[in-house]
Image (cartoon, rainbow, N blue to C red; front, top):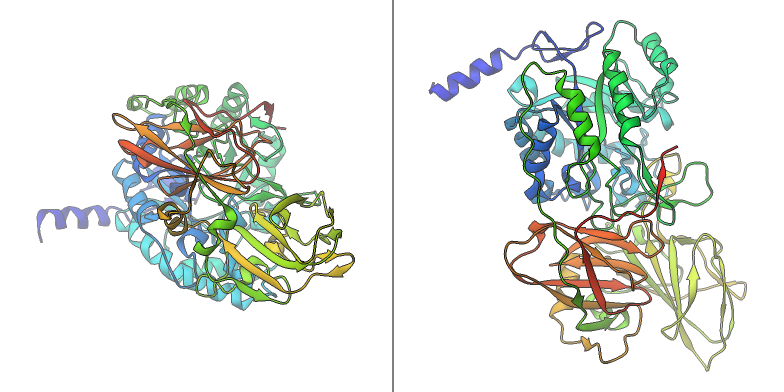
Amino acid sequence: MSNTGNRLAARRMSRVDGLRANSSQFTLGGEPFRILGGSIHYFRVPRAYWEDRLLKMKACGLNTLTTYVPWNLHEPERGVFDFEDQLDLEAYLRLAGRLGLWVILRPGPYICGEWDLGGLPSWLLRDPDMKLRTTYPSFTDAVDSFFNQVIKRVVPLQYSEGGPIIAVQVENEYGSYAKDGEYMPFIKEALLSRGVTELLLTSDNKEGLQRGGVKGALETINFQRLNPNDIKYLDGIQPQKPKMVMEFWSGWFDLWGELHHVFPAEDMVAVVTEILRLDMSINLYMFHGGTNFGFMSGAFAVGMPAAKLMVTSYDYDAPLSEAGDYTTKYRLLRDVFSRYHAQPLPDPPSHRETTAYQPVVIQQHLSLWDSLHFTDKPLKSERPVNMENLPVNNNNGQSYGYTLYETPITSEGTLNSKNNVRDRALVFVGKHFVGVLDFDTQELAVPDGKGKRTLSLLVENCGRVNYGNTLDEQRKGLVGDIEFNKRPLRDFIIRSLEMKPAFVDSLCRSGHWASMRQQPTFPAFFQGKLHVSGSPKDTFIKLPGWSKGVVFVNGKNLGRYWSIGPQQTLYVPGPWLHRGDNQVVVFEEQETDGRIQFSGGGEYGMTVDVQ
C-alpha cells in the first residue's frame, strides 16, 4: 500500500465514532463537540464564489456547513439528472471538507427554503391525484429514483469514510405538514437502505415537534426568538439528549409588494449568546442567503387566501450579504464565536470590490409576438391546459416562466377568470393590452372591435408555494375554464415561454430585432451591451424606468424584477461577466425608459423589523 493509502486507511480507522447524541452533549470522535453551524446553499451562490463564502464562514468561528439539496434542479425532467457545474454537490461537500468544515446534509426530498414547490419537481403535479410528501406510490417511486442518484454521491463523503458529513436530516419540518404517519419512516429507511450511517436528525418549529419526529433520529428545533418554555418542551420529549437549534433564523425572507425584513444585529446576537450559554448547538439559517436566480423563488400562503410571492434576492439580512459582503452581524458573531475556540480564528478573506458600471443604453427590441416562432411547437387544445400538463420537455410539462393562451373572440364583453389564473395574466385583444387578471382582479371588460379577434392571455407562474398544506394545489397557467360573457372559452393555441438559455440564445442570434428609433410593442425583449474593461466585478442592475420582467446577462437568468418592490436591484456576479462586451437582455411586460442602470450595492427597499 502506498503512503497515501496507509494514511487514508489510518484516517478511516480512527473515524469509528462519528457524531453521537448519547448524553446531553454531542460527541465527535469520542470528544465533546458543539455544532456551530451555518447554512449556505450551493445553488444560490455562483460556483466561483463557493470557496470565498466558506472561508468567510470558517473565519467567523463556525465549524459546520449546512445545505439543502434541491430535487427540482437536480432532476429537471423525470429520469434526467444534473450534478454538473453549479449543481456539483460532491465538489461543494469536498470543498467544505478541505477547508476544515463539517457538514450537515439536508437532502429533502422536500426542503421548503423559500424555493419553488419546496424543491419538489413540478412534473410530479402531472398526476392529477398526486399527494406530495406522503407514501402515495407515485410520489415514493419518484423519491426512490432521486435518492438512488443523490445518496450514492454523498455516502462516500460521510465521516466514517473520511469525509465531512457528520449528520443527515430526515425530510424537513414534517411536523407542520404531517399528513401521513408512514411517510417519515419511509424517508428514514430510504436513507439507511442506501448507506447513510451518520447521525440522523429532524427539524421542526415548536408546534411541529409533536408530529415531526421519527424513531431513531434526534429532534432539533427552529426559531428566531428564544422562548425558555420551548427549550423545556424539547428537553421533556427528549431528556438527556443534546439540544440543537437547527434553524436559528438570522433574518427573514421578503415578498413582492411588502417591506424588506430585517432582524436587528444586537437582537440577533443576544439570542445567539443565550443559546450558547444554555450549552446548545446552533445552525444559523441563513449564514449567507445568496440569490433565487432564474424563476426559482417560492411563494408564501399561510393563513391567507392568495399566495404572496417571494422576491429574487435571498439576502435574508444574513451575516454575509447577498453578494457575500461582511455586515455588522458578521463582526458581532465573530466576536461571540471566538470565545468558543481555544485558538485564534483565521483572518477573514479580504473584502471584494463591487462597482456601479456606466448605464447601458438599449439598442434593440423584439416584440414578444415576433419571438413566438422560437418557442416549441404550440399545442392546439379545446380546453385550457395547465403548464405542468403541456406536452413539452419530453412530456414532463412546463415548470417555470410564462405560458401564452390564445383563442378567437367575435364580440365585446366581460372576461371572468373564475379564479383559474395562476398567478398573473396580461390580457391582450389583437395584441393590444387590455388589463391584468390575478387573484385580486378576476373580471375584465373587453372593448368592442371589428370581426374576429385574437384574445391572448400571457400567464406567469410567479412561484409555487413552498410551505404549508397547499403543496398539492400548485399547478400553474390556466388551471380551469375562463368565461367570456358567462360562457367558457374554447379552442386554444397554447405556447410555452420558459425562456431557457437556448431560447434566449436563438432570439439574440435572430435578425428580427428593431432599433429603438421604432416604438416598441409590449411585452418585448430589449437588448444592450455592458462593456467591461479590466477584470469584471460584482455589480447590481437597477431598472427604475421599467415595470416588471426578467433579466438575462450572457444568457444567465438573474431573476425577476418588479417595480412594486421592495427589492430594487438584481445581483450580477462578477464571474458571470467577461472583459469586453457582455450581452444584457431584458424581457419587459409593459414599459421602459431604454436604460439599464447599475449600483455598487444591493438595494432592498424600506425596512421593517421581523415580527
